Image 1 (spheres, one colour):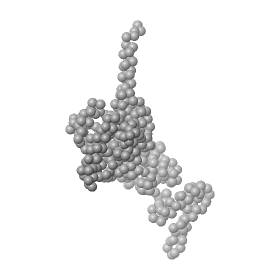
Image 2: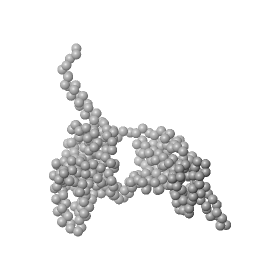
Image 3: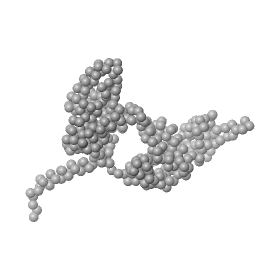
Image 4: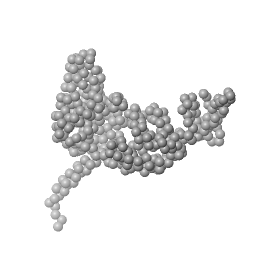
Length: 384
């Protein structure tokens, strides 16, 4: 199938001849809503391709749910990380589609009130968490996804404005991370000794790495001569599998100094793994990951989390997630006088504001201590 471009008024139209009954042809004019020919060419290719695959739907007949599906399949899946796409799809499949599917709302007829009612429903009646409604922070994620979809519709000139801009979103609940004291970290390290997650826990306690970062750490990212460790790869959960991907953002890709105690630990670990490699011979998995089983097979993301929770429970330490070790590292760095900017770089946050939002409660504690010291310093001065 071929199509041509014809300008009518200020817009270019895709002109397609369709064969109908009796062997005759019917000419179809489709408005690209593009004033520039280069932009109209792109729209034309997309229309012709969808026509050939019988997936083209006229803009006036597109339902919101159908367009959302199309966005997931033909945009998000092609342009986003696998895990990001999977997150988008999960929200659509479990929440957005079940709510909107029977409402038959056309994309061009979608109103702010339709979206507002959806948010209100999810906050009050959503059942996914087993307690009733979803949290405000989760609904904010839904809003971000819907906003992206409608932005794409605007870009494709299917609608003239993004109606999600006019919706009131719930107020975000500030996240306060749980963390261990230095003494509790010491106990945790004792409890994880000689377990499969010993190396992952020890290194994370020192560097505050994300779970995916520690599981994605390979030996070739550790330079003993230059005394550096580079975070350049992560291993994350995707469906039922574990996949390798780039770090979360540009700031997450970072090179840090190799801490002396960690360097000594890693040298011993590397020697031990070399011995295990000889022991297992051809059966040894040459994955190159630092955190692995005796046969070289890398640790699974789910196993690390479950084993960690099991050990914490048995140790009678306060219940935290493996990711909360990261918060613990940040909290005691703050208490040691390390600045927010330095902590932000160390943790690989994309912006210092992220660090300040998460750890402001710890920072306030430090400032209160400073205020007390100043008060004590001038306690004997009288102004009577």
